[in-house]
Amino acid sequence: MSIERRPALYIAALAVSAGLAGCGTPESMTEPIVSAFNEASVEIQVGQGDMGFMSEELRTQAIARADAKAVEICARGPNRRAEFASQRRVPINQYVSVTKRLYLCLK
Image (cartoon, rainbow, N blue to C red; front, side, top):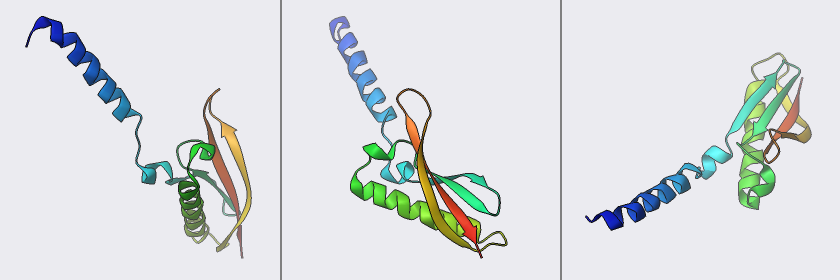
């Protein structure tokens, strides 16, 4: 390989690795995260980014997974039933925010 072709190869490799680093699977983007639980309520973070940038299908999947996670978590405490109460966007920095859904754990 000649010296003249190496910079192009390095640039191409850098572009491919940068592109792959930003990719996530749709499942990981919609995986719910429990951010708070106190037996009376549970707060679920929906996915790893802003739901506004998700497709309608991914958004529906994310909400369904959050609902299922809330049911699972509420069932661990004395109040067994999870009921959706509210949703809010929490900014992480100037450009990124996450969505958190609050569920009440009811008898």
